[in-house]
Amino acid sequence: MYLPAHFREERIEALHGFIRRHGFATLVTLRADGLAADHLPLLLDPAAGPWGTLRGHVARANPLWQAHRPDAEVLAIFHGPHAYVTPSWYATKAESGKVVPTWNYAAVHARGSLRTIDDADWLRRLVTELTEVHEAAFERPWHVSDAPAEFIDSMLKAIVGIEIPISRLEGKWKVSQNRPAADRSGVQAGLRSGGSAAGAALADLVAAAEEAAAKA
Image (cartoon, rainbow, N blue to C red; front, top):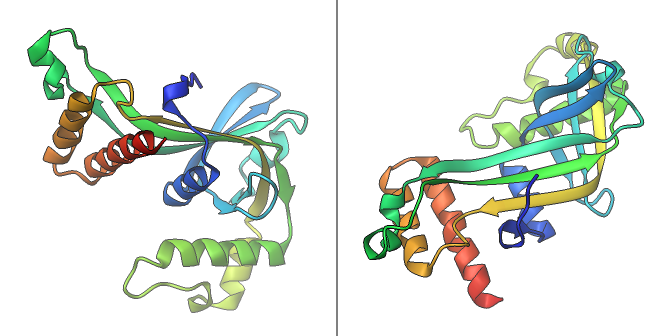
């Protein structure tokens, strides 16, 4: 992705935290007939390798696990909050009128080689961890053990595991770092005024980037 220096995020703790919060990825692979994109939740193991390792699973009927070219890297894209930014939020609009709309967003790209895992015990551990992560917010979490064992066994036979040791990790926080302080304040206020969770999350990123820049 196009990555100007002022939008680049390189702190591994920030990148890993982002992946945990926005774990539903777009996985781009190269096959004999060209590029393909699949959408799936991925878990991050931060301790496996210098940049961490991603793990997930796909349906056995999905050609991804057999059709991807093993000599080519795969790309996992993690999308964060994003929003249209109107020039009306900028103090610069009243000062000079020299403003245009833009789009603020955050994203992380993880690259690596994909390997497939067709092992029932490995898959059971993976789906158990996936379930625990995503059920944690519920008042009465569902557990894999809540379903009949033979049913889970049959479900595991219908999926194949994937693992991607990360070889390159890039983050882009396009959150108004290139605007004057008064404009950034206007963007934060405008994003929060909409009342949406995504707007508030993006406003937090604008504020965090401003704070990080002040400390640098």
